[in-house]
Image (cartoon, rainbow, N blue to C red; front, side):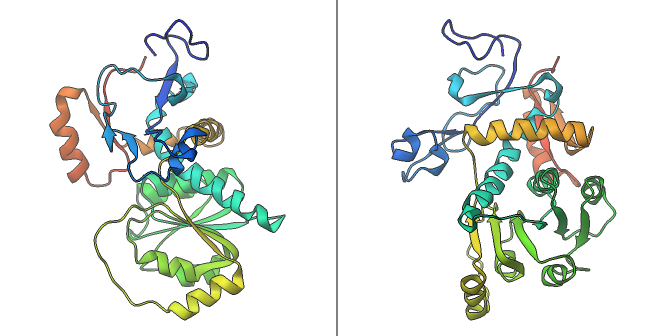
Length: 295
């Protein structure tokens, strides 16, 4: 933080901060601060849709959209935004299941071991759940090592398919899908335990088609009181939640978050290297641009 306006009291120059991405529209949800739940057809996201992003040395924003980050997290603050997608999905799962009066999930499965999948495993472990992470790549490699550092288990779906994993390590009270591959969703619907919540975080395009056992899936959801919910983007509440969990993660798993920052690119002048790294880097977990040195 370089400077603040004369009426800003919650921030000061020298603070480390992260800006939120979504900006409000006109719906009632936008007006009460839950702009990530807008019903407007047109939505606004900095760097994504109809608003400029943050790939610049300086930017100006309203304090409502700027979240303070402790100095101890300054090196890993770039992970806060993807963490908020996880925080939102898991918080909503718990909120939805308040209908059950008591919901104490014990076992969770994370589908996918990219940045969001790894962060989902982290947040679920911080909440004390037994976590199984399933992905395509066989262990050992960096991502599987990171999963196991959390005390979670990792397996390749080629060796342990989801439905078999549910039988061996389930029933799964919560499944967090972060694969980017939509057909997985229908398998996850079948693997979900009774009273379970399936959280979808993949934003998929295309027009994939497949046959599914529709009657069996429908019956399982109806008789098993199951829920499916999507998560994308987040409002300030989940950024603040993410700061707390990242601080806890640094205390419980020192250095773990930093190991996700696999491919830094220094300086805006190296934008071509940044784009090439995004599309070509093998084994990348988090590719990011260091706009300026973090002191």
